Image (tube, rainbow, N blue to C red; front, top):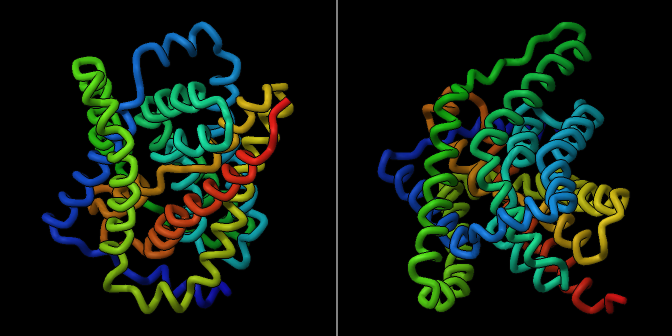
Length: 316
């Protein structure tokens, strides 16, 4: 398995400046659509009822990266460093753009879901670069020790550049979306649902654009990527549900926290990977990109699946 995955690591992601601009603009548009559902009231609700949002943030930004780190250490001998780093990068991202829809479908606490999206999007400006640096660095040190002093090639990531990119792609669309919602509430109600559907299509286009030149590699190795992402996503969902249950959250809150933890913004991970100022072309990050791309497809399937099952279960 590891020999097959090494083939993916060697794939270089080369995009023209125009292509990179298009991808960045697409993700910014997707995040603008997410922000349309966020209001100042959601932040106020967090202050008035902080326990469930705190549980959700801890689950997403601490427990998920921790569980991801444990997972990649356990499977260190059968996955490559690039695959491991891809898993860490995805786990460091905020929630995905359709988590609110899934929470509502699952009869979860939709208001909590939107509040968590608001907090996660804002917090990710700092926590996404920070988590990737901490857990990625820890992985490099631990694996080097396990492998009898063999040093892994360090990922020379510029944290300032990563922070700037995350801020541009998350922070600015968040502010613009909330402002648009405040100024044009009636128009916002009309366009929010169509934008959600468009967002899914746009994300799929990002994935297609990313791998249109590497389609044969993807098909040849999808069985390995599928299993890795399947396990990683299952652990993410289980982490959210288990921690929310331990913290004695009600059924609706548990469902929302589960979905927020298991549905990650892997589109952000892809955009970061495509930025040569953050991940220089000479770095072997092909495995990271395949993990992020397939996660973006799979979490839609798993999220809709678990939401459908929960929608059929009566809440007492």
